Image (spheres, rainbow, N blue to C red):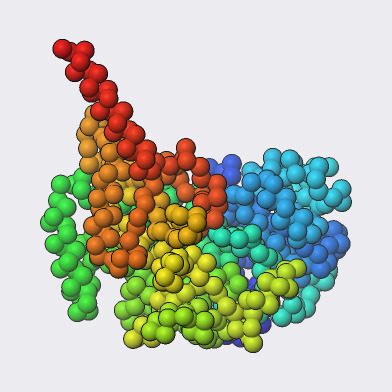
Length: 604
């Protein structure tokens, strides 16, 4: 969509792009307390944004201040973001899933003057009030009437609209500095304390245009929003891009409503993360297995995939039942945030879904590269999107024969810097290039392949580099494994020699399907089964990459809201009682042997 190239600010989306589709549905949403999904038009959204912005500017006097927004995905969350960023001040999206102490820390760090929140977060906000400034302004998205506790968002929007009708155009005509600090986003912090990323209108508009070059026809589609919208991956690629393109956004009520909501909304595409694709794939595989025709269906998959490569695509017709489970219109799955197993992509595509892989970071607004439907780039994250330049920095690569280096990025999408952190900014931004902290290389076709995070690399005593993600992908394919975290463990404190350890969580459903209820093995027995499989994997790897220790985590890994494992927290906060090790298995076997011996003696 070439016309999106001329976007100067997010305000152009409201004042120019909306006007082309005023009576079209912008959002399909079921608000809390409502009985059914409702369609909300672009005209309604525009009125709400202008009404809220006008009231904030003239009645609350918070011009140029930071305003936080926190809550579930909703059109009111979007309205808040756009109203603040397009003429009031600096918007600060917060993760609703954070514990109260972390939310308080981010509010204090950013110095917000007002908090807009969903009613479901009212208890959290109430608990934080004692520690917040007395003059803090509170706005409840669902409150019917304003009171001393909080303002009603609906009421102040209505008041703002009345002010506009009387001739107040102070907000509508507000000028935007496209290069000024307008959005403060906190990174999910998988390895370090979250950083505050400062973005401008120029950054975000550049990325909206880049998205349109990857998927130029998506303006006529409906997307299904399931990821938290405070995350820039979800907000830019779903909300900003789709409203700039004139598309429709269907908002899922939550993951537990996924199956029900997707059938009602019937979207054309879904933006997701690998953990979500893995969950969908397992559900489909289970349903196919239950039909008793799994072998026949696998043959059909291969035939359909083969014909598709010849330009004859009948996958959607053959697998109509699978398609109907997702509303019947789902054509595209856009996956990002972490690497996705290429074999899993092949399986999902055989059912008639088309995959787009993307790579990006909060600091790059976020999209850096992406695959397209024009070429086969499975196993990669494609080429740089329009307006972005990517290089692989090999200057600090100790292995002269390796083509793996740090991925660095340049473009209008690159952040202004880190909030109140000049040191981190200086380390990340050098000569116009952003140093991502990710490692990768270009394959022969010129597509970028991400091998992992720089901070995750395990360095052996001999100076060998091991990329955990490579081994994790192999272990994740094991039938009883749900997820894997591979890390370097100091075995000998004197020599400080590092070994490769693998910590896994179990796929309980797969175990139950394999064994009858009364014969389900204990976790200690499952440990032996997985260990044997890992030994088989070790034979496929270079010796220095071999997994030397296995741990089974009893509960889920500690994760970010985009399902990435927080490695440092996982290692630091997991105690021995949370995991099963080889020592535990050996003790369990001794105990069983002893009990068995006691029984035999009693029999005699």
